[in-house]
Image 1: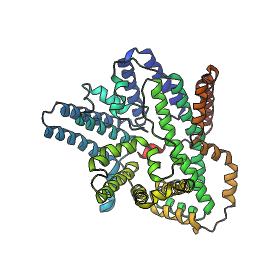
Image 2: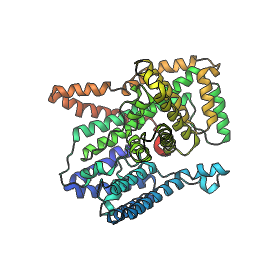
Image 3: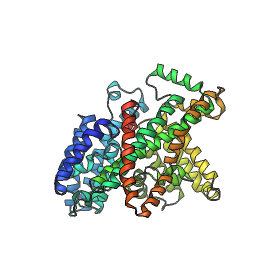
Image 4: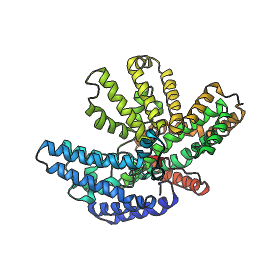
Length: 476
């Protein structure tokens, strides 16, 4: 079950919302949320919900031991035990195939291991919970159900944002009454839903028509290579641009929907995207893109390794570790490692000399950033590096095919592309802020009532009439 499905929109979420509304106080709301979250996860992963429950159990128990330990050595031992369990499990389910491929053919039983949905998200959340207890930033929860609820909240369990326990503890378990934000919550959810169903899906379909989807099997790989080699340079660039729009609109849409659902229930999830495509450098881009992931690696990997405080060689090493892990977090294949290393190299170059130049070139720096990101998305799209090489060669003149068909396709989708590009900028957000300043009751009704209703109806129509509704978070 995904947010952009009719069964979620018109059955699961309304029933969950109704159950929470009928309960008084946070304890009743939390009980409904826990049951709803487990049902939601079990809908797509009926077996792996036990894995989620076990990992939450391990983190709950180890956090209690950390809190009760009388010596620093014992605290460290229980912290290490919690992290070892989490890393071992995500390593087995997500990375065993990649590790085996280093030493030879992947055993058949390893290839059959299914990736649990959202394991990268809830593993990181549980690790931050135990680490924060160890650091003394939060107190361990006495009830296992509380930790399970935190890890399994269906709004963000399978698609983010990565929520630290300390940032949501008061909303979940504090003494203050539940503060529902119905208007902003419904509006944010419907905006995210529209971004997914009306824009991201359409951009994804356009990208797939120009860049073949990831093939399965050697025969499909050969056909994909042949198709891409016959694509024009204009068609490849247009396909990569459409894919870049899909990636951002899809990822940010799920964060929007999660934040919106949280607001309705008195939960405040952190912002995850801040219009990254308007950045002027790779460094700025990653301050705006998947911000909760970036803050995780900063606070739990980069800074503990020493950050930039131990000289340039150590800073380079720490940055390399962070970006190798960032690539691996996104997927268990070598193209993701190279994707992370691509940004590592760019960040090193920017710090060495390029960053100073970019500050003096307000337009060219945005062009540089977009070019760097587009090339990176080619690596992100294909796990087979022969496909990556074919696309990159074709983009830079290696294809002699005519661009007439691609030009026609661009003209036919010009309004889609314009709308998607506008959605990648803060233009509409600024317009909403201007409307808020007017303090008009009529404008509030339009913004928090009429517009969300129209977006919901249009999204529903799109879901009813179109079977193309990919969930690209499956790999995470």
